[in-house]
Length: 156
Image 1 (cartoon, rainbow, N blue to C red):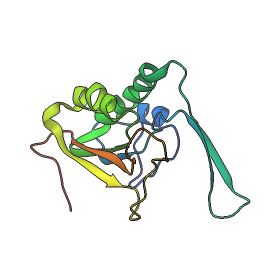
Image 2: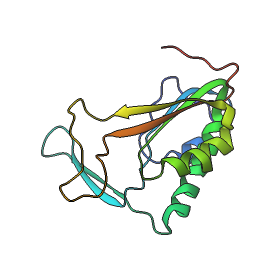
Image 3: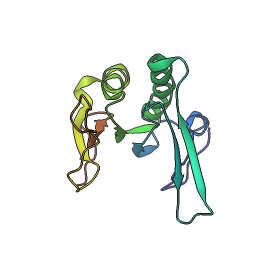
Image 4: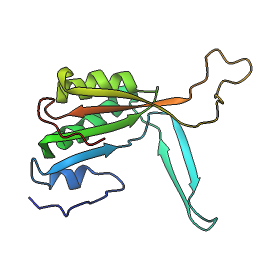
């Protein structure tokens, strides 16, 4: 097992790094996984010369996606200190599956601290097109779980 430097930010697939970390060494985890949107993304960062993309398509469907994410969250739970917390950002594509199938099972229902509704923009737009059969989807969810709801650290 390796010790982790203080204030480390990990970008990318964290599974191998998590497997190599000592247990109960992390204070806070913010997780922004793929959303199971069944889309490909191309994003320009900064200037036209730097282009990054990723694919959010899952062969095997929701079951495969939840299994992939659950394995990572299990390791995150292991590395969190007893006073630690996790914030998991998701949207409507898989939020219920993530909460019930992963977070409630691993952290326990009583360790849900908040379900934060995050409005993506201050512009009151929505993604509902004319003829669409749904209201606009303008919020995401951030689940806030403590490893132990009796002793977690909270700094507003």
